Image 1: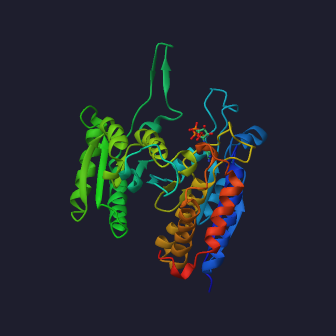
Image 2 (image 1 turned 90 degrees about the horizontal axis):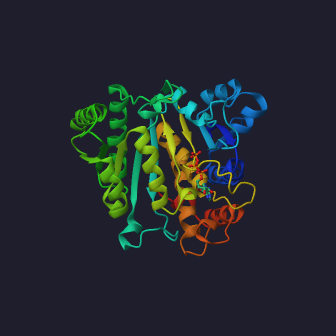
Amino acid sequence: MTPSFRIAVLPGDGIGPEVMAPALELLRTAAERVGLALATEAHPAGAVCWRETGAALPKATMAACAAADAILLAAMGDPAIRYPDGTEIAPQLDLRFDLGLYAGVRPVRVIPGVQIPLADPRAAAIDLVILRESTEGLFWSRGRGEVLNDAEARDTLVITRATTARLSDFAFTLARTRRGRGGKNLVTCVDKANVFTSFAFFRRVFDERAAAHPDVQAAHHYIDAMALDLVRRPWAFDVMLTENMFGDIISDLGAALMGGMGYAPSADIGDAHAVFQPCHGSAPDIAGRGIANPTAMILSGAMMLEWFGERHGEPRALRAGALIQRAVDAAFADGRLVTPEHGGTAGTRAVADAVGAAMAALDPAAVAA
Ligand code: ATP
């Protein structure tokens, strides 16, 4: 029997639909080549949806997301469309909270052939994963902050034992999975434990969980020192876990290390659900021009297939994910596919076509998952 998975597709706003369309084509091709069935259904959500219907994440969309095997999301939000209090429409954050997607997985891997900002030859070996806690931290305060007498504003940062322990276990398991693929068997806890009670607690819970995973090396780093070292020697790190706001910031730094927002995939994973989406937003500044880089979206789709493979013990899904990743690597390998972020002319269609052609030339049976 052909294994099959149901995917709730949320194209969203701005460049979202532009990068989602080619990513879905490539996902379907990869699935067909390994003998996997993917049932995809698109649902409305986002800033335009809010303006037109009054709901940023309609109930029917939420129900479809909860019922699906995974959610594939492109980008949501538009600075020109805001709630009455001035904040932006960000239903992707609601999904993370409502579905308990505590592990924000942000791989930072340099694709050979893509221009990167660091000149040091060791930068070609950058291959780390930022694990951003995605349901609490400073983002706990979203919608709860207060301004007192127009004189003082407060937001609260929340760290819980349960989530920190789960995220730590996730990090150690990930490091263990990665060590067979060149990972450094290292988890670094990134915090500000020298100043804040909340981060001292975060570190204490991390250390407790580290003791339960003695086969994986555990280390600590302060967030400010990590900002320095992510530029100075990012090749030295493997898995790093951090609080929501810190993770939000260093994820963008990570995206820059690999060539820009258009190259950075991500996943938000919980115990029962997962959303796969590029790190970038809806990029209204380039929407509608056919120049959005679909690579981050395509690689997020590959992460989804790999997650299916690991979660359901389905080797065909693992092979389909690996096939897409190899095809992306092959498309960029000779350095001639240059996207507009780097002054080139390879727009959305050109990148998707190059990845498609590279995939056609690969033998799925020879691609090791
Ligand atoms: P959000 O807060 O929703 O994550 P943001 O404000 O961080 O969004 P983005 O929409 O990610 O902003 O855009 C940041 C910059 O990166 C913009 O200049 C945008 O054009 C560029 N960018 C984002 N995604 C892509 C892409 N896929 N291809 C090319 N450039 C992109």
